[in-house]
Amino acid sequence: MKPATPFATFASDLARESGAHLMSYLSDAAPEKDIRLKGPTDVVTRADHEVEALIAGRIREAFPGHGLLAEEGTLLKGDEYRWVVDPLDGTANFAHGVPWFAVSIALEHRGEVVLGVVQHPSLEETFVAERGGGAWLSTRDGPFLRLAVSAAATLQASLLATGFAGGQLSARDAALVPRFVRAARGVRNLGSAAIHLGYVAAGRIDAYWEPALHAWDIAAGVLLVEEAGGRVTDMDGTPLRSGDVLASNGRIHAAMLEVIASEGPRSGRGAR
Image (cartoon, rainbow, N blue to C red; front, top):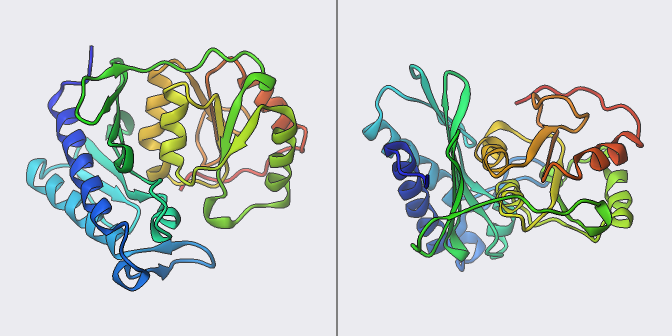
């Protein structure tokens, strides 16, 4: 059953509209993008704020009783539903003119994510998952195709991905990168958690790990992976509660956890 509920249609259309807005800014010089620092290496642009305002306005208009949690600070109280939004996941890429970033829109019902949409504007790819309805991909307004995680059964046969969460990595987490480089076919950092998770769901990447993420980074993508038949846990193998995320095709999950555990026990970080 391809995604066809009113929520899925609304979120998919909104993600495409938001992605088109981002693409209109991509080739602009830094002054036009109004690039600012949120942290030592964490940036925000005019487009982040404009797209967040666009999404918030559409949600208020269509679902006035719904809540909203968005990366750049928009917070609305709601009833049983809450939207969790990253208007521009991959801002560093965007700021430098690299066309590898995404719009991530998720919907929670009573605290459980029931819908996830990730839109990759430069490739015009829209990933959509509804709880119990599978994960799907639409390319350039084409038909929706059902997604499934890869069949890779060993780390040696796997392509992995990771990210650096604003450049802030502990020595322990930094040490994992060369260990996985040696153990796997390759390790990539595409600069967007949402795209990484969408690619795990599509079977393009076999597993993805990254510490210290936020709800808006992963809410939509986690559902994509789960509905495509994959597995998502904390990086210590427990149910996902923090921002330390491990997502895989399921077949190599234990091997990933074994490598992570080899660096010693993780210090607990609460979900943010």
